[in-house]
View 1 (tube, rainbow, N blue to C red):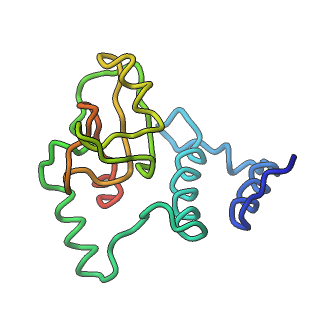
View 2: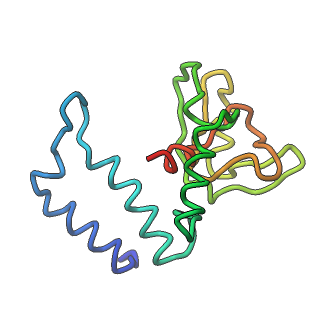
Length: 150
């Protein structure tokens, strides 16, 4: 059985299959290759382009982008940068697998896992938090301000 892939996804897979040395480069001072971090953001952008499933960028004008970047430096209880407690289990999600319940916004893909070990778990998602219902899992934080600051 062959899994159907989009054109850009196949190009990404072909690049990884070719395994050029640049994919294994480590930034000075880091301990892991840069490619896995780049791949995640690239995959999100490709998903938005091909599947229109994840909001990669919400700013349409330079003023919107500057306002969003400025807001990203303001204190927010949902910002992942404020997560100080060490957790053994950290789930990273795009945030498209969420649904609103009576308890708040719940990630139906990873919520059950996090709830099994609530004292050891944290959920980090790319989708913004704070506009609407709060997350149902208390230690859910957003990576969205990080993207704006970057």
